[in-house]
Amino acid sequence: MEERGLSEEEVLSLLEEKKRKDLKYERIFSSMCSYPHKIAVKAHMKFLEANLGDSGIFAGTKEMEDECIEMIARLFHAENAHGYISTGGTESNIQAIRAFRNLKRKEWRGSPKEGEKMNIVVPASAHFSFDKIADILDIEVRKADLDDELRVDLSDVEALIDRNTIGLVGIAGTTEFGQIDPIRELGDIALRNDIFLHVDAAFGGFVIPFLEKKYDFDFAVEGVSSLAADPHKMLTATIPAGCILFRERRFLESLAVETPYLTTKTQFSLTGTRSGAAVAATFSLLKFLGREGMRRIVRECMRLTEMLVERCKTFGVHPVIEPVMNVVALNVPHAEGVSEALKRRGWITSVTREPKALRLVIMPHITESILSEFLEDLKAVLA
Image 1 (cartoon, helix red, strand yellow):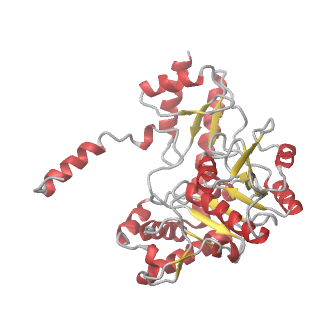
Image 2 (spheres, rainbow, N blue to C red):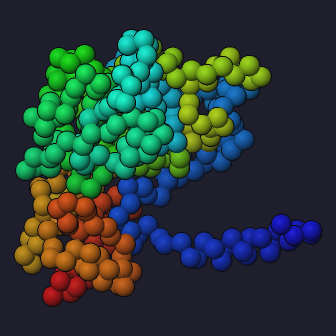
Image 3 (cartoon, rainbow, N blue to C red):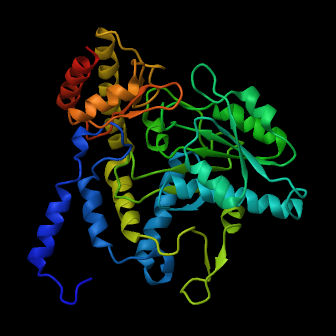
């Protein structure tokens, strides 16, 4: 920081210079985020100063958060779910497992025997946030194998459960392949073993309810204890906007810490200061789009996903699995080299871990003309 500040014009010029170095979403096929919807931007700007870390000061913003939780809970077949708008899937996943740990500690009246740890069982396809969870919460994260369709292998899940297992995780829209784990069957396993089940639907939460094919993945499944879904992904809210929902209030209460100098007595969130602007953006989109609007968005993304797959098949490239949602993993030779070659042509893609494949996400910023241009470059690179 210099002694004397710059003029407004000089600062804005610096911002423009930095902005030009950022990539535009139109060339990005690797991200699960997109341009925020224009009404979300307007709502966000109107509530820039709102801090839900001290929600008694911002009563209207808090009302919006409560209504967001009600609307999202109903989308996921829960009339009385409890939760809050988080910063995204990572925070939501941490909080779900933290609640499981806290409740099991209370139930067991302490931790496992000396030298042992509580553990959770997650699919090998789970998001890297669960590696953070292992570190932060000092919990063992056991990774179950996947089946031929890249869903979690139920027999391996059962084999990994022992006396120190506190919960299971199922993914509804895996980050790499867009696959949906067998949540109903995982729920049955959780109930039989008296453990919790968290559904990470950070991406799929605002896709799956609007697909033509119906899937059991939410609170309609009896064994589901919690669910994460991110409005800043397919709902196109401003960043950061996640959501963590619990079936019962006791999960949320297990996260409470006292906040004696604030307008509220307790706080449930992982972060202290929380953006009311992101809540306003989420609220505005839930009200503006409705289910009909989300169906239109998902339908168009799926149309382009199908177009991508069919066009690729004409030049001998097939998906690893037939896409369940708007995520495609293409079985191309030397996927990392192909991704690098596409980057030199201005396209940003990514590569899955196992099996290696070229990963593409068809978000709302992808149009038919953009996709056609990309496919021509992909065909040229492969040739």
